[in-house]
Length: 456
Image (cartoon, rainbow, N blue to C red; front, side, top):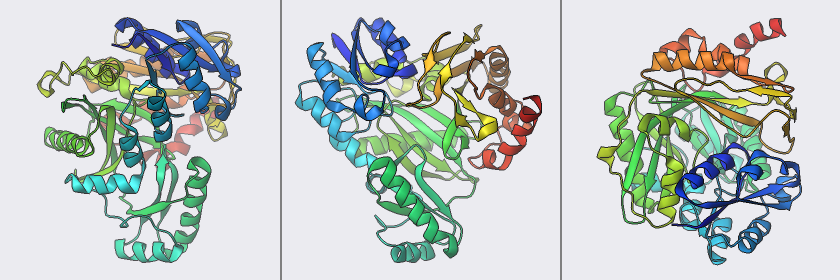
């Protein structure tokens, strides 16, 4: 097992990894930017090293600075968390070349599955259903028009190097196609320095269902059931739950088999997630694979009793998994709400600033993954996520009631948050019945904001 791990990240995921390492008897090294000098992860780690200025390119995206920090602190391995360099194949290669273990899959697998068009091809080879789409990259508007006519409108233009909902545009007819194609390429170029796009048939109001899996270096692959991530705003997840209120056992088995089949096809090692879109007839289609731990992993931990970060670290240390598929039992129900420092009444604009007071909820079945505290100054340079509120219940009804109670107890002063907005969502009859698809927020978001505006 590793003796010392450098965590190439910040915020709540860095804190989460530090906690897992402590329980495994592994020392931790935190890296931080000048904006994060007093951040919680720097205080909790055994060692903390400044690697650059506040802009991510000067610090958390600065591969050479991170590797230098790992070298001088004599680390065995580097955990990238999520975001930043977590799915950067070049960084994984540099990490290995410098003699450190990269806690994640191989650079070749990261590169392969990070290219969405190539990932679709791997899914086809594995016999996993994919959404009808273009055969590879669409290089011109004329090609896009030809492919769209073949598929039939509506279509979705998607960045080949995309992720996090960026580089995606829908087109419902030929008139919209040109502007959507240009916008998707421009956004992809800005976000990923890669403007390649492809087309997919747009499914109307599907569910976003994903399968969490883990694979060791000895051929063992297991999955931990599904998560429902359908509650989204502009392709950004707001709330996740496990298991899905929509998925029956037959579909659950099919999703699990296909996720494992794809992981086996590409020689996957470590923890990862296979994401699917599921239509109203419960037909599922491969969407993408995330080659890292995900923001929403706690709901799978709560419903299976497994520590996914510890499993991820153990797999990277070449230890065989001690669990089999038969050992993984889905029990109860878990929900996660993402708490962001943002103002819902101002188009969810991020609002950095000083947290003057924070009180997190407690009690049975309540978990908080966060890195904020009273007096903490939220930097303007990073994502607005400040906490993940996770609850567990014996069934979905209890989990919903528990989440409502926890949101009422959760108070963050000094900055605007989306806490009241998430509480409004949890009180919606359609959410309570589980009748949520990825288009639900676009149809109902403005209505949910009206009571908040009256109270403001």
